[in-house]
Length: 121
Image (cartoon, rainbow, N blue to C red; front, side, top):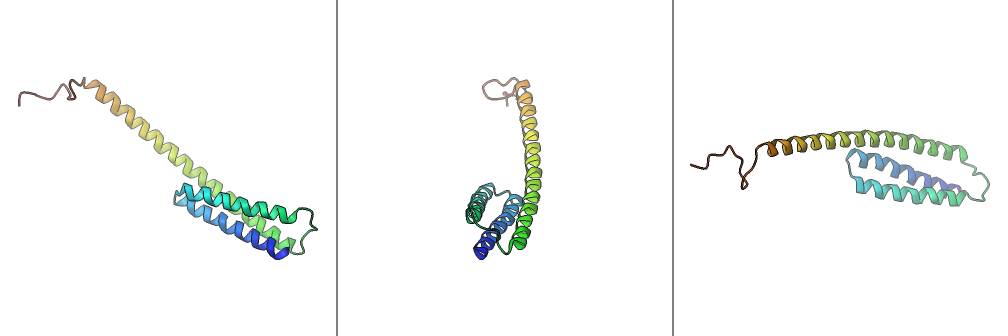
């Protein structure tokens, strides 16, 4: 049990590290896949521990869990920063589109061309 539990936590930790890379690269589909895979390993760890005495290597396992938590915290902070950046970019695009729409409506288009086009040429 001890070796399997350590292997499960190591896999979860590696997937958590890969999640950070996916966030940095803005690979959101990959991030979702990694989250699902990691959840599988964490569920497996819970199953292994259910009804069992504390493992002999629990101090080492606690260290792995702390690494997981620290990596998660870094990932959450990074994800929040990316989210805020994307929201800001989206707002800027929306403002640009609104300004363009306002400008175009002020040109009083007739038959697809602005009023200021000289049709006599």
